[in-house]
Image 1 (cartoon, helix red, strand yellow):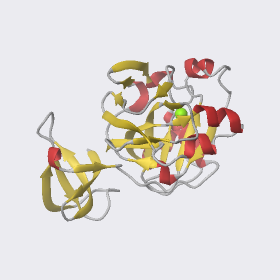
Image 2: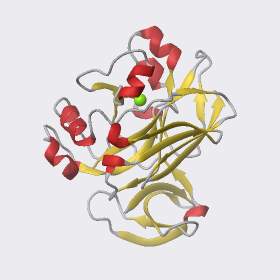
Image 3: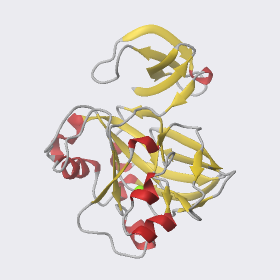
Length: 256
Ligand code: MG
């Protein structure tokens, strides 16, 4: 099942996205998408709705340097344990919404990432039970003002600007995340091309690691880290991240 959030003429709703190719249909879910959804009976052609971020998380948990090649391109060896940081929930935007480049940064990078979406309140989850607390998976862009990240010594400013967390287009509840192709294109040119099998700490290990620290709530997201090939975006460009079995997250880039 694919779960999305849309704006329609009457408001905002969670929907399931049914069908294939150009014939997708958004079917409105009553209340919330956790557990077994019930439907209101309303539906719209997918092409006619405005797609929002598929979830509004209470927190965005991110993992840094979780692919060896990316750790090396950042100038170091990968750390033994996952490196965890947070993005503010206000950084989240949906597909096709502009990433806004702040005036006080001269380098803003894309980072295509597989994102795990939490489905129930939990803490101290053993890796073996991780799948039971997750709703599914979506695609994220851990947008980073690289100059600010380096200047500050910690990452809140560089990673926390409004619009620096595109998510979407939907949450896939059935995909197996263990070995999916992940690619990032900038204006159609492939910049990142890897597989989630190369994650140093896989999704179950990350759920265990994060939930040992903080209670995870329904809708919280864990961004699993980016592969090698990160690079800068400039105003007027289009960034497109595709994960096999999930879909494509596309955003234009604009000056703020
Ligand atoms: Mg990242």
